[in-house]
Image 1 (cartoon, rainbow, N blue to C red):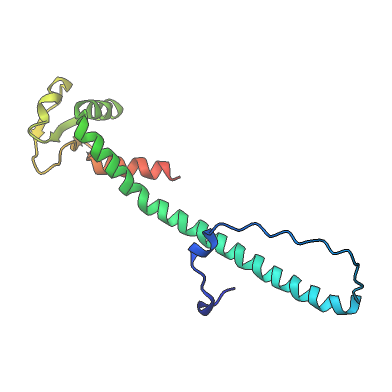
Image 2 (spheres, rainbow, N blue to C red):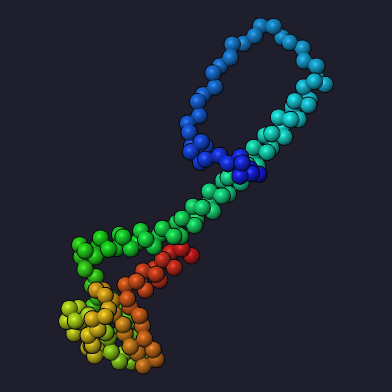
Length: 166
């Protein structure tokens, strides 16, 4: 394990590796005493094992860092992309509310709340509508006899992200 004094920046590991320079073969065969080579081999083996251990720890740390980064960046990316898309084509809030009313059809819908500039598109739903300009564009709330369904855009995005990261 590396100590804080032995910290190596990630950029070092990402540098391209230069190919080894081929050595010229020697014609003479040298005799090596096996007793001399063993301590050097053992030391090299220990260094290799230590290096491989450090590489495994580094890789595990990268995987953990990537997972944390994805979890924190994904909502921001989704919001940015959806924000751009909504500027191009506004959300069809009437279709979103109609789908929710259909899903919860067995419960009695008391009132649907939305912004005054978006409420007109929902008149064909056949439910009581109320304006609530505290809501943002694309947001709605559906009040049922048993509770309230939060159909704000933020809540819908969070539900999608929760399902996507499982």
